[in-house]
Image (cartoon, helix red, strand yellow):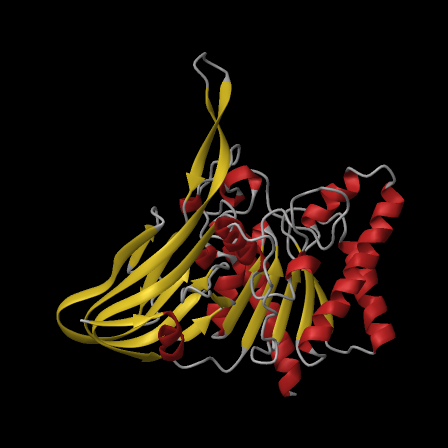
Amino acid sequence: METMYGRKIREHVKLCGRTYMDKEDTLYFDWTCAGMEFQFQGSCLMARFRVMPEMVVRQIPGETPGTTQTKEEEDWPWIAVFLDGGETPYHKFPLDREELTAVIFESDKEETHRIRIVKLTECFRSAVGISQLKMEGKVWPAPKAAKRIEYIGDSITCGFGNDTNEGNRDFYSGEENGWMTYAALTVRKLEMDADFVSVSGITVAKTGDFPGPYAMNEIYPYTNRILQDKLARKRGEEKAQYEVWDFAGHVPDYIVLNLGTNDSTQVGLSGDIQRAEEKFEEDYYHFLEMIRKYNGYGPKLICTLGCIDFYLYDRILHAAERFRREKKDENIFCFKFTKMLMMGADVGACFHPSIRRHEKMAKELTAFIQELERKEEQ
């Protein structure tokens, strides 16, 4: 059985999303829907994973009826394996140990398949890498799509709690399905490749300590600052040396920016609402500058919001219109999703959109991009 290690793996697969090669020769694919796709010819394929769980605090029933108590536990990531472009996973399973070997494909005879390994859960809650591929057979890269989309977003883009309909609670990692988000569904409908940079609870920029350790403008330039911080802490290193993402090697045709939902909470918690709204608009404008700095003015930039809250959409419109006017940017557009219903089948965990609502969002975004495609062809 042949064994292929991290850097060698990278040469023989198509990388999906932002991936990071660690100094210990582990290929991390940590963002939503990140992973790899390749052709495999053989009878057996196994992968050696390295995993870092996140500690989460959950509310559980207390000893007395009607009461709750907190419990800290490890939150492990989930991955899925797809064969030959299928929509339904061939395998779907949690990576519930820090190191484990899993069977990716096995047959009693030699077969040829296109295999895709996808991380279903988001970057912030766990870290996943592959250190080895063991095989009876051979692998080579799957072809790249003709076009690429980059998604920049928060919990909605991650698929936070989308695989349940119990709205009044937090979710478990097995209920975060990045493959069934509006973003991933749109990519498959349009037959494009995609990169995700999405984190639950994230805002465009920081104001005080809310909501967490990172804002998007602090992580966007880097391949995976969140992961590198985790690795540095694990090794007792004082500070990580962040790897800048290879923007020149991954130029998107479309960039979909869906931020502003958490920023509305940040505004609401401020002492001066008017000033906080103005700061958001200015921060959003500067983030548009950052996106163009790294990607140029060629990609079509879609500033969108939804489907939970639209409080800051007018501010987004103002920032985008100002950017279009001042930068003479003809490739910036605005788009608003239909608001989800806060009851019934639309609702996932913690009143985030369910898979059903993500499917509706995907139809809206797909139609919007298809219309831009048609105008481009004219």
